[in-house]
Length: 169
Image (cartoon, rainbow, N blue to C red; front, side, top):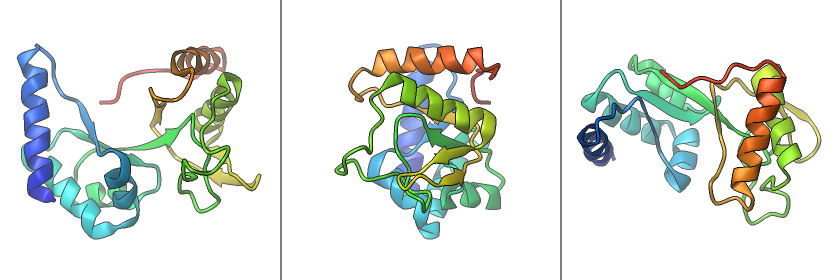
């Protein structure tokens, strides 16, 4: 896994540089992201792969996850991430997409959750309890129905609430 991550991050960095950009952060996706949140050995392999390419890249992972701990162990910058458009379980895991209500498609609901994350440091979980979440970045899914509308609502609400929006780095 470490070598696969190194290869993919190096390739991505090359594509970004070829277009005049500079890669600032990386994030695993999907099942790999979710497994790395729970499995320390996998998280360590991912963090080592990223660091072998560039030790200044910010590794994004689920707030409170093993991936962030693994990055910290080796001195790799990391940023806890929370999801404005996903429902959380009381354990801190994301509710599986197969379950009804797991994806927040109402723009006002996603904006409310984003404000609670950014300003108040918590999410309301599937059972109605509050879960502390320490995040530096928010994720919105582009495949969520109405994603552009949700993104606009989240940004507008965060700005209205005085939350500073800035790039990672």
